[in-house]
Amino acid sequence: MEMNTEMLDTPAVETITAEDSVDPKPVLMLAEFETADLLLVAAAQVRDQGFRLWDCHTPYPVHGLDGAMAIRPTLLPWIVLGGGALGFCGGMLMQGWMNAVDYPFLVSGKPFWSIPASIPVGFEMTILFAAIGSFFGMLLLNGLPRLYRPHFRSDRFRRATSDRFFISIDGRDRRFDVESNARLLGELGATAVEVIEE
Image (cartoon, rainbow, N blue to C red; front, side, top):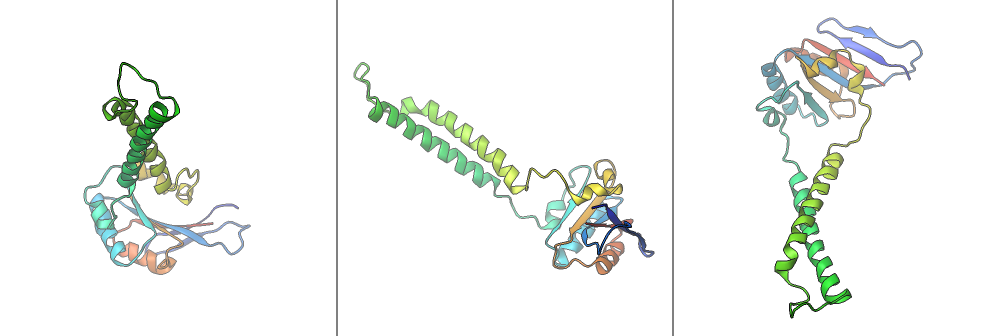
């Protein structure tokens, strides 16, 4: 389906729709800000309004943005810890099975299985499983791979990697309403508010 975009430059509203669209539904609202300070204030207000499905996009890390957005700590360190523990235990059990049960081989009176001799393999298995857990855990928690986002329809959004700051509100958010959200974002200092339709 062809792209439909509504530009809401407060206070005037300009609507651009595709000719072949049938009852287009808004899926995303983008608000553009010129400075990081304006974005921080706006993010705190959007958070306080009770929005849940929204995000901030900046060309560089902005100090204090996580707090303004009330982002909870990630589960990734626990996934990495679990992967490392699984790798260590698996490596130790693998060596115990191979050396003491499956193919016991007596070498100079040494024990079939000992912890000190098994540490190097256990350590390497810890590293391997922790790395695998971090890689796939990051992909899972970020919802990747995702080859398409509605953000890509916006020409303005291309500046998010150079000199502009954006807040995006997902159309699935329970508080999503085009008119009231555009008014709120305009009052918070947005230079432009854009609605992306399906």
